[in-house]
Image 1 (cartoon, rainbow, N blue to C red):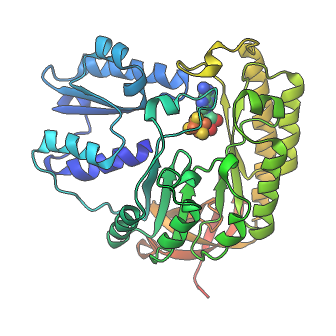
Image 2 (cartoon, rainbow, N blue to C red; image 1 turned 180 degrees about the vertical axis):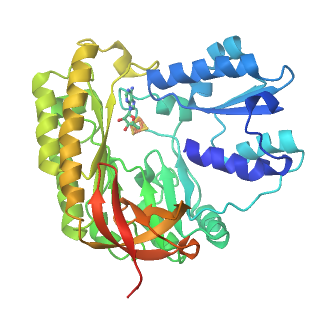
Length: 403
Ligand code: 5AD
Ligand code: SF4
């Protein structure tokens, strides 16, 4: 979401030019995150630095989640000119008008573009600050999303990624049942090479949607489904609303319908009450599921959340030990799964080219680095033969034919 708001701001602020140095800027916009304590500390230290080096008349604008949940502290410490969440396009345009007078949108020359379709979150997981920062779920109307997606297509994008904290809740607040599926079907009528969505909540990811998704030919077969824990006890403490059995059923159904899909996840380590046995259940489930990739986080206490007052905290050393163990296991799994691609041909949509190397994704969303691409390959789907892998990417050479 923050990557999107920053790029949206860029597209409407370009007319007066964007300075690369804070010292020279008339306005400084800092887009913040509040999800983990460490991120907050980094932002505070950055804001302190900015305030020291900026021109004394320069105006500091602070947006994003932290602006909402730490309003008073930020106001006191950094005295910004403007402070607030600013997650909707119309609100970002107000910042644009304030700076530019009148705004003019500049075309973004990006192959892959984000589009938020639902804002906020209604779930209140006991570790998470997001609902307090971003408020309740609010979907854009279907007409709005279609219009915006068409605009993105007409600007030259080849891939669209539909965004939401819980993208599969799309339409619930508008009382559209199965809104997520209807949305995907509608967007698939626009001839993007690829359509993707991020992030799904396992609680509301309906099993019966999965076979229906097969009718969407341009769907990127990437399913990011944050698991958080493999222990039903911890999942309940986290207020996730599913069990590991329900989660596993979703994974099995996806693999049955989309054998080449990548399934990725987030794991939260060291939530209060997670004992050794719970942790081992997470280890077992990760080994059983074999995610393509997993993003691991150490739990940190967040204000406003239910979890803030939970007893049975896990000592920091233990959290570190657990996360390192999980990362090691997952790295081996990723290498094993990615290794199966060596010698195989994949179709890659080239999103960027740097030093003759093309960067893109294959149809299951795995990142591929392709050697010896041409300038003309930008925005095209090309074939590549994979010859090596690491825990993040597949590497290959371009094949000079397409079927
Ligand atoms: N501490 C650490 N990680 C967190 N996440 C959410 N809240 C916290 C927290 N308090 C992680 C979750 C989520 C990802 C975006 O960030 O794993 O899926
Ligand atoms: Fe946070 Fe849970 Fe909402 Fe995701 S679903 S944003 S983890 S409260």
